[in-house]
Length: 97
Image (tube, rainbow, N blue to C red):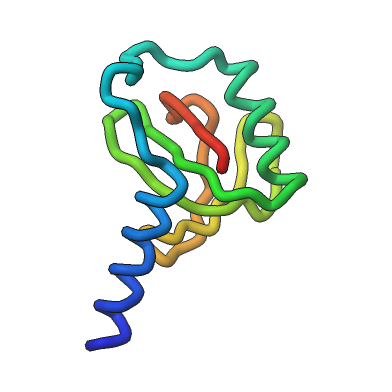
């Protein structure tokens, strides 16, 4: 149980370290799909951590493993400890660190 608690604390620290925001500069506008795909391709090539914000408002941190098709990527999620396929149409905003 202590290991699970320490992993949750570790993922929370990663989130705060990489993705601290200036509240005044937050946006409510979605990013352009072309920009999202460029950021995702760059993060895949350089094995960077990304913060995904989905259309429903949920967020997720992880690394991209590979690209399966033109609009789909495989994400190794550090929040949920799972590997999932993400669709470009489900993404509202993406940031790389």
